[in-house]
Image 1 (cartoon, rainbow, N blue to C red):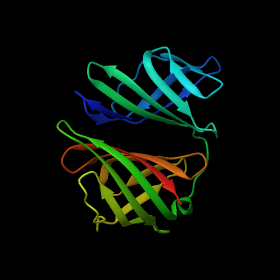
Image 2: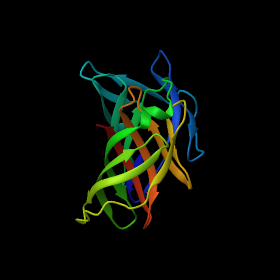
Image 3: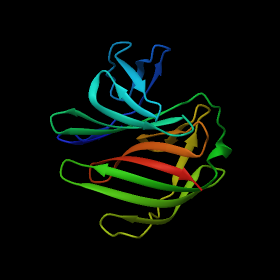
Image 4: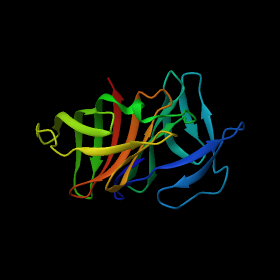
Length: 194
């Protein structure tokens, strides 16, 4: 989840939804957990999600029923983009190999940017950037090579960067990642396998 406005930042977590559609958050990067069954989720026949804990929370489910994209207001001048993914798949490092396109938003206390990146990940998990562009017109891809690890549950981490967290999708063709970038920008990236 990425927040923007008077309270910038990102969070990630895990949770469950029971048969009564009640959501329980079981872990959170912030350490803050609401009570069990804190919200009841509803989903229309068109795939639009609403929640009882936040009347501004509005989301849409993908046709494969594996991901929900949610926008919401979380307080005075705090706006959020939340991405909920179904997990339960088993992953191996080879699932990460290939060419990936990343679309991202980043927010700081004084500015916001968008960015696009094309990269290749090899069998060792090394991510090499091939092309990029951002809101400021920078088109030089990063020369830095990130060492990524894909865990058996789809969790993605970056060696030497403890605040980067990613989750691969159930179908292994999309990943969502949060990261703090240089300059105090809190980033959320949607990464698509080509």
